[in-house]
Image (cartoon, rainbow, N blue to C red):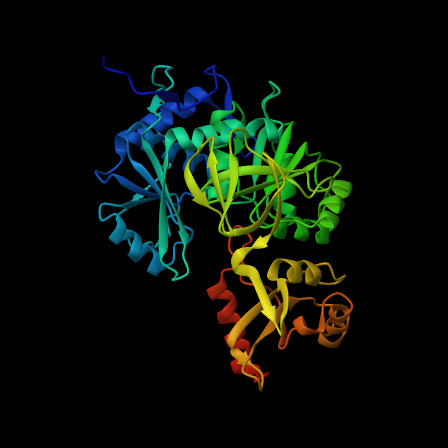
Length: 453
């Protein structure tokens, strides 16, 4: 007996007049979205693999839909450096770049996103995509720095966001607008601002604001209920800016754990709840927590954790295979766990153990510190030959001596940083993460210029 493949609609919006996106405060209907995706699909070059770098979140989503309709695969690397693009071309020799930037210099065949699209509307019919169809290949950097590919089927990524929608209060029958400070190409932004809108009947904002005033303007431009999808670094910047945000119905954060104190400060300042998401490139999103109220994470429906030989694995739900997690995790029960930091972040100095996550949290909790990070460099050793900790800090109102005194009150003397480097800003990427290579380059430049030990 021949079985038919499972099909999953591209959109969960039932009506052609339902709003799928807002750009500059103007709503874009599901009918227009399907029509524009169809027209872009007809214009795509022959290659099967597409590097979609459109900054405008709506255009990125139209490009994604065009790829799905034509069974093309979206490539989503973590960065677009020349070396990553070279490796990407080796991974997919037929790849081309879809961009909405006239100044794009990515070294691949390029297709410019159309400035104007055919206004003719196609027949209202929501495309159905096979669940087993490869939708995207996402990449993370391994220890060697080479991008490591993870293949995501349409069924896997849609189940992930549908299972998570109730945790983010998006299943109450109302159309929520998702405003994101993170790029659509990053796994967190891809799931929480694009796929979540498409698969939960909600709406995305085309803008990707970065500075506090721009975030406030983007939130004000869309109707309530609205959710801000952001990162810890953006939240700290918002708190320090003094900018008043328009009413927000929920704040969602990911990419690095928040402290309870910071989560409570965010909730008090902006008058709303904050929910954190836990996940990885390998697994997608698998848990949430209300950080201000609890340190425990609650797993997605069907997802379970298993410990074996000092390693924790996830499986079940949308996580099809037993997948190792790169964190130190304490399993609390069938659906709860505590997170104690990244496995690679655990450090041992003079026989004492700590983690970069803990040390960074103590550093950034000091009044006057706007941003900061510890680092460990094999090149920085004392007379014993043991690697030493250092730190780079953005704290324009503090001296290095005052900062060191604050740290002495918070952390064991074994972990006090030397050197302690004061900088104007840290080289964080678009998701607020601090790439190790960029951090090390900053440290090397400072040591070569300053001659600090």
